Image (cartoon, rainbow, N blue to C red; front, side, top):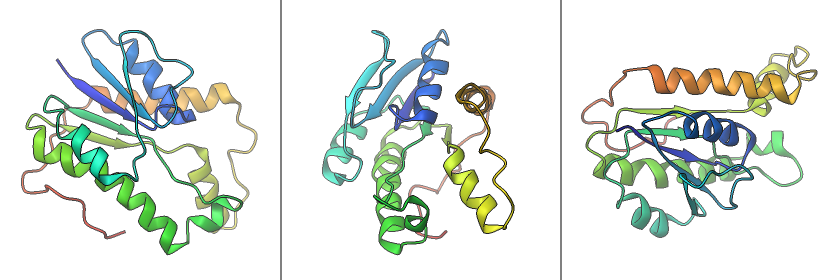
Length: 175
């Protein structure tokens, strides 16, 4: 049975991933976030966790040998100026640490691991558009269209048969 971790399950992209996979028969779903998601069915386990706590992450994720997929939807944003935070080296380091704190213990324990999807909301798209000096195409999108795009991304994760590459047991710090 495929087993997916929804990391950042209480956010917009994470909650869309959670709804999608919770409705799929035959999937074991675990939601990970600091706060319990508003939508979290009884058959989904929620693990409250701060991804910056490396020791706690190692303890929890190393005890999950059955994980086959990760939908990584978490982000640590700089308070007050989210877009400026994306260029801040300290903010970048915090987000890389969060990702490593999830992926490293999973890759060392879950021998059937197959796929990770890095799922981003429209805030990242707004940053890309503003850096290209074009108007952001996402400003007028409704919450429903955001959900539709997120679910399309989740279908790609769940329908793909990509395999983790051997020998890639740790994340590099390269951008």
